[in-house]
Image (cartoon, rainbow, N blue to C red; front, side, top):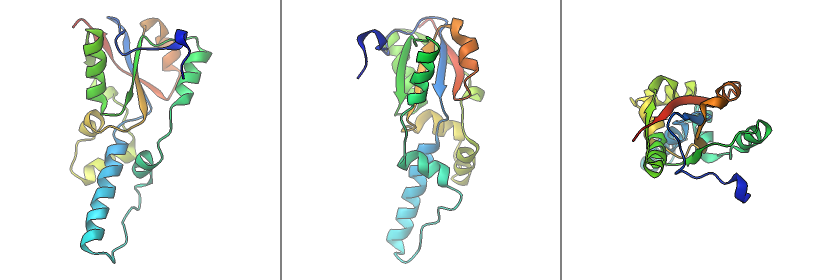
Length: 171
C-alpha cells in the first residue's frame, strides 16, 4: 500500500532527471541459467550432484529476492521523492524503455555505470555471456529503477546502494 501523496508513476520523468538504480543487476538471470544447467545435467544423469560451488550469490539472487525497503526508507529520511520509478523485473533496458515511453522522454545510459557484482561477472564469463547484456536483458533482480532531480545528486551519491547510470533527455 502507498499513501496517495507518496505514489510515484512511471510516466512522470522530467528532462535532466538523473536515472538511478538500486543494488546491482544481472545476477538473478545468471542464477536461473546455472539452475537450468544443473537441472539438465541431473535429468541426463540422475546420480550426479549439482555443482553450485562459488555460485551462492547469483543463485541467492533468484531464490531469495528481497524487496528494497531500505531505498524507500532512505528516500523518506532524506525527503526525496523520485520523479518516476519502476521495479527491475524484465531487465534494465526494458524498464528504462517503459519509463521513457510512458514519460514521452528519452535517455542516455552509461554502460560503465551499470552496477554489476563481481560474482555476476564471473558467472557470466563461465557461460561466455556479456555481463552487461545480462544486466540489460536478464530481469528478476528485485531492484528499483528511478529518476530524480539533479538537485538530489549529493544525497544520492552518499548511498552506496544507489548508482546514477544516466539521465533523461528529450524524446
